[in-house]
Each structure stands twice: as C-alpha cells, then as structure tokens.
Length: 127
Image (cartoon, rainbow, N blue to C red; front, side, top):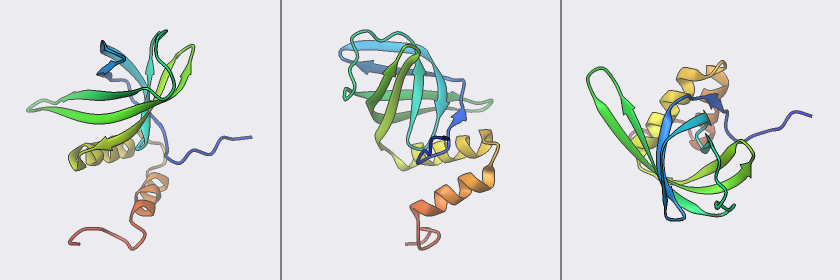
C-alpha cells in the first residue's frame, strides 16, 4: 500500500547545518525535502524523536548567497538518518521551499494543488 504524505517529497542533494542536543552538525547531506520537512543522512546516536533544533540552509547562486533559517523537530530516526519536521520559518524561507519543490518535482501540477490547499480561498496576495 502506498504511503500518503501531506507534502510531496523531492530529492534535494544539498547540505545543511544545525545544532541538536548541543552538537553542531555541519555539511550533512539532505536526502529529500518537502514543504513540511527534510531528511538528513547520517549517524545520530544521541538524538531522540522530539528533539528540537534550528537549521541553516545555505543557498549559493551565481550572483548571490542566501542563508535560510528554520525551526525543526525530529520526527523519525532510522539507520540512514533523521527526519525533521519544520516548526517555524520566515516567509522567504517558505517561498524558497515552494520554489525548490516545484523545480525538482516530477509532478508540478500536483505540487501546485498542494500550495492551493494552504490557501483554500485562492491566492493570499493582497490580503
């Protein structure tokens, strides 16, 4: 049976930096990303489900560099890494996530429908 997730996941091979349980993790590989969270590859022996952290995602382009900040909570831990659910973020970080998910998805129309579900009355522009 296929698992139904709230948000579409996309492969997102970037690195992330965060502090969790007093340990700074830097340069760790993200496996996938959604509007709700991400999965980080690695060994996290002291991390527990429920732990909270602050993430930094550095996005460098040809003419600019962007540092995005997210609050997150560990929701899953397995032999490959940890699943983090976003708990808070600035609007520019959310827009970045939307852009990345749209860019990397194989189903942009399905993902666009997810965005509309967040705004049932249509666009929130101008409100």
